[in-house]
Image (tube, rainbow over all chains, first blue to last red; front, side):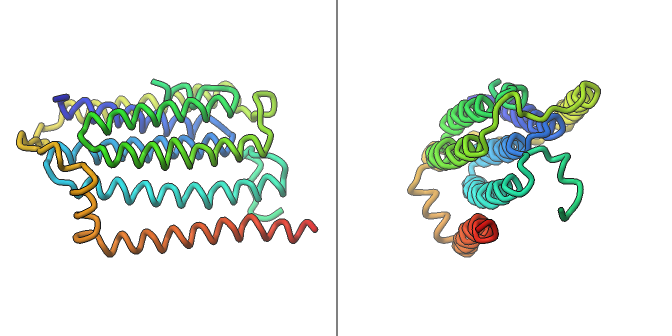
Length: 100
Length: 155
């Protein structure tokens, strides 16, 4: 079996790629996708620990995280479409003010 | 890793496609971890539904590489450096930490299948499960409301 440290490293690498994506891009949709990457890296970590510890509570929590992430993406994309209709861009730097 | 391509691809559509590839490989990792249910749920929910939603929004907003807003070079460089430093710090802290990870050799392979996971979900975790479904309905209604109100304002 693969040592658990390798899953730790994979998860850290994925998480840091997600962080870099959030810092790097200005397109709000790509920032959402980077957040998805970070959530998935945490999911991998939870699943790995639950398998190696012989306790399936971790996998149930991965399921809950997926549900919450799906709900978040639904609402986030709806807000994004609304913003795009109003200001015709997905550049998050143009959202400096709370009203327009 | 395809995850790197997600954040460095110029065209948002390519970025979404690379992310789908990345989710497929994550599902492969779940299969390797004996979590078959999670692998299937990951494929259906993420690679299926969420990514179709992303692709739909990208195409609806008509984004392409030319209209993609980019940051100045210096900020890009700083973002990559800070991300790399974060990774370095966390990996170093894992490497030099005291190794007392919970590793048991008696992990049975049937733990992650649908039967056992469903049993845990509907007995020990029944309340969180129901709360999750309420949250999901709230999110669905919220999305519909957000998408609809704007239409009425425009007309």
